Length: 406
Image 1 (cartoon, helix red, strand yellow):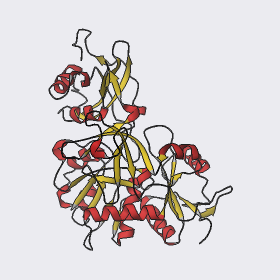
Image 2 (image 1 turned 30 degrees about the horizontal axis):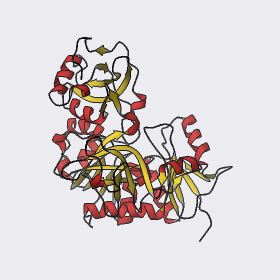
Image 3 (image 1 turned 120 degrees about the horizontal axis):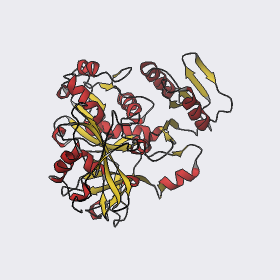
Image 4 (image 1 turned 45 degrees about the horizontal axis):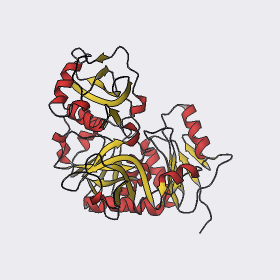
């Protein structure tokens, strides 16, 4: 076996990129998929950090000066779309990619009659994992240039398996897409309204470092181990209220962050991946992901998980999308702020309406104390909400000073 493999950066439109990625895997090369629509400086920054040996773009394949080959067996290097700081380049070996693909295929009971639809970016792990599942499973895959609700609706039935993110659902609904025509619809990258659960929908949880979803509907896939930090070592014995940090172990874990041993050592400890996400258990034993550890809001001494508040507020009829984060507050330490995209910009919800709606479903400390109306929420390539990029409050609506204490 060679002591290194070429690392090919692919900067092509999605259908062409999919063909090039599979050809590279068949040739034993590693791939670094990049966003062909990203600004030049952003691409240059990723290339400088990852140092691939070759570049494949519209001009063809070329060798890059100063490129660093990947370790033997490497299949992919994926720039994370993480919520906790600058991107990192996660290295995944071929065995990990294969294990992740087979675990998902087994959970979905895929067969010769199945066909994948990929309408997610290939430079993110959500889209790249679809390609790997199809390739390792010997299944056809239909790759769309970009997310087009009409094309997804038209493909339903022809394709049997699809991965989506919750932010796509309103546009699909508006286009009249019948998701029930897919045999399975994987949904990850954010909270899913309770009324959408069930049927063909599968709630997934995973990271770039696990090459996509490793938990389906709250339960780990075959070969995946979970535990919560602070428990006695097993998920069943972990704290049920505020929970703890989710740790993952299994054959699909990434090798490390390319050229960054310090970050690698912080993330991988004793064979476990520290995800940076908080979770707890439901009575049925299912894992509930509460959000990023760094996103936890402490208001008046009460821990508030933004995801829990977002799920409730998203059900308000005047709310099209919502993101929640904590802002400094001299009285409470932090206050819960809701960044809302109104369903009708001419008739947005008021803070009083949202608080009343939340107080019927949540403890008082979890109801928003500030409302900021925004035209859109910042999201990464996978559709994940980037809370750190939520805009600053400009003339926000705040609760009256006489509102009750939590």
